[in-house]
Amino acid sequence: MSDDGTPLPDRIEGAPHPRETQRLIGQGAAEQGFLEAFNTGRLHHGWLITGPRGVGKATLAWRIARFLLATPLEDDGGLFGDAPPRPDSLDIDPDHPVARRIMAGSDPGLYLVRRGGAGSSDRDRDKNFEEGKFSQDIRVSEIRGLAKFIHLSSTEGGRRVVIVDAADEMNTQAANALLKMLEEPPARTTLLLVSHQPSRLLPTIRSRCRELRLSALNAQDMAQALSQAGVEPGGDTTALAELSGGSVGEAVRLMNLGGLQIYAELVAIFQGLPRPDRARALKLAEAAATRGAEDKLDLLIWLVDLFLSRLARCGALGPPQVEAAPGEAELFTRLAPHPQAGRAWADCAQEVGARSRHGRAVNLDPAALVLDTVFKIQQTAAG
Image (tube, rainbow, N blue to C red; front, top):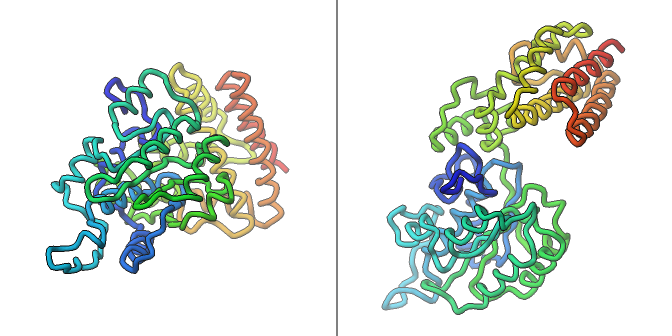
């Protein structure tokens, strides 16, 4: 968040900003892929960092930025031309001048493009966001600011690094402007594009970047990542990793809003299908209808969709190997014992999702929306 509590677009509430995270957990393959390119002289000018939301893509981008800005260019060798040893890690001492400047948002060799403002000064970007000078996408004006930056003379150490977080949020004009820079890359400049959904990017942008793909975290890595972020799971880390899809960002959101408990309540409500526990369903609906509970309602809708998706998958592939709530596997096995049942639940998920989106769009009473969802699931279970 900014100083006045305004949520910033490249930070997950309740977790440190990616630039503040020193270690990247569970993504050793991606780090080694970049280091191999660096050490063999095949450092590409454009890198597309992809993977599920919240698995450390932005953290990797900031680690690469620190590494590049703190590592001398090959022609900046010692007095007698001695080549420095090849690095085997992206780690940079937090007391290094570059690391200190990046933490302060003041390194002149780094430029951040994000929704709500761009530039080399964090103060200017945060001020724009706080004053409402932001939109739901990255605009061409922000890419034009980048154009001015990359045409400046090289700064201390000779390198310049650009982080675009997230590239998926560029509008058409901004994407075309960035494409021109990728087609004619400036010397000694590396562009790092964070992308949650690379399919949304122009194919020509993807083709001009080298991809580093990050994977979902397992339960052990999830526990380490949460501990590093100063977040205490306070529950079943294995279930949290399963429910969040291995995303630390999603895990933090689930913990902030009581997602594990809500999902366990959904499983309990539907244990009696085709006769759900109406009293518990009503209580859940009333909780979602309270003033200021919009975030919890959004999470509940998302968890219902996840519940139905996991149920449909059970029909095709069998029960989940890891339960996200007690009794989940037994319930799924009973409700989706074969592929035909799985397809029925997939159809149910699609209809429930459409009805939920429509209900939110027309401001339908949240309690009515939740009860309508329960009724539709009951209909599907009854066959």
